[in-house]
Length: 425
Image (tube, rainbow, N blue to C red; front, side, top):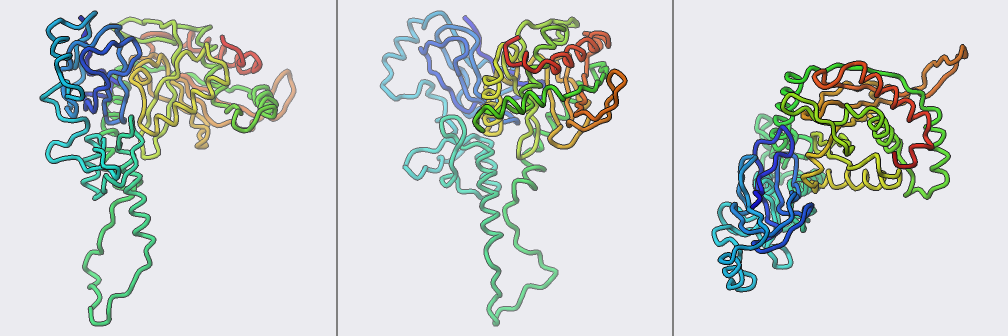
C-alpha cells in the first residue's frame, strides 16, 4: 500500500489547498498520471503520482488546505473487496466522498452559476480575491485546469474592469448639486494588477520566496565564479540557421544556452545533483530549472526535463510550452521538484552579470547576462566581439572552485562549437 501525500513543491512551501481530485476510488493509475490539482502561493499545480496501482481511498476532501506531508490518499495493488463493492453499489454520478464538498465549492453558500448554467470551478484563492475586488465570477473566463477560474484570471478581470471605468468620460454634476469638497476622498476603483495585488495578493508569494532565499543564503556556503565568453560563432551560426526556418520555427538564443549548460554538465557531472543528508548526490538525468518571471510579480523556476537528450527544436517547443503554462498557472508537480540545477538569464533586462542564490537542495546555479560588444584580444590581435558574461554560484560543501572552473570552461567550449549543440549530448 503506497501513500499519496501533499507534496513539497519547493522549500518555500508549507501548505497547499487540495482544489480537485482527478481520480476516484477504484481508478487505475500509473506513474506520471495526474492525481489531484493543488493550489499554492505560486499557482495551481497538477500533482502527479509516482506509483502504479489502484486508488483505494481518498482521505481529504476538495477545498481543504493541509500542510506539506499530509496523507491525502492510499494507492494499492488492487481495490479492497469491501471498498469495491461499495463503489459498485454507488449510483452513477454519486460523489465518492460523501463528506467532501463539490470541487471548488466555497466555505459557505453556493458557487455562482456560469452563463451556460453549469457550476463554475473556482479555486479558493481566486474566490477570496474576487470577493475583495468585487468581481462577478460568472463573467470571468477560466484558464486553469479543466476551465477552472484561477487567481490570475480574477486579476486580469479586475484590471480590465479598472481600465473600463477609467476610460469612461468624466461628467460634471448637475448645477443644483454642489461639487464635493476638496478634502473629501474621491471614490476608489478596484486596484489594477500592478498595484494592490503586488502588495496584497502576492504578499504570500513574496514572503515564501524571501524565507526560502534567506535560508539558502544562510545555510549554503556559496562560492562565485565568472567568465567572459566570445559569442561570435554562436550568434553567427544561429543567424544563419534561423534564416533557413519559418519565423514560427526559429530558435531563441536561450535555447542554445540551455543546451550548452547541459553539455557542460555531462562533462562536469558534480554540479548536477542535490545536497541531502550532508552529502552530494549526483543525478544522472539533467533537468534544468529555468527562471520565469510572472507578469503579476514573482519568479518561478520550473524544470525542463532531460535537456541533454533533447534537440534544439524540441527544446524550443518545450520552453514555449513551459513559459505559457507557468504564466497561466498550469504546472505539473514534477516541474517544480525535479530541477537538478537552475539557469537564470537576465540579459533581456539589460543586466550584464547575474550572481544568484542556489535553490536547495540543488548545488549550483548558472547565470547569464546581456551580450555586449567588448574589446577582445586573441593571438595578439585586437578587435570587438559580442561577449557574454557567464557566472556560476556553487555550493562549497559539494564542490570547489576547481570543479566550478572546469564547468565554465566546458560551457565555453560548447558555445564555441554551436553546430554540436544541434544534436543530443
